[in-house]
Image (cartoon, rainbow, N blue to C red):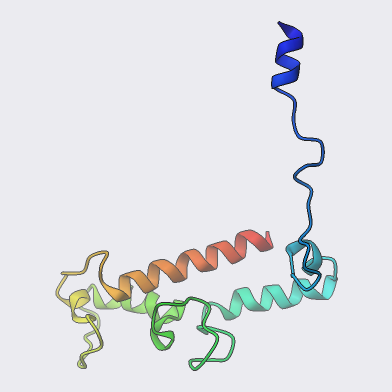
Length: 130
């Protein structure tokens, strides 16, 4: 019985220690080999709170599928905190933003989706850094 358990409960022998075949593929093992890269990644973490992509509001967004102009973390955080109370009111019709003010928002609201996506994008970047 012990021999049977040893055969069935053995682990892999470096089967999971693989590297991509494409030499141009950038992995965390390559990025964090250079101490200077830590500063660049940390800068991206902090920049992700205020910018929506790599080139500002007009290209290479961090999150696809949502409007890059309103997908920044701080903008979505402010809307979720202020518009759901009576501290601020938006006068223009920007998508379904008035659902926040009227307490009628749900998971289908584009601003709720943008906030959710941005939060978890930032979390995933931070976890990778840590």
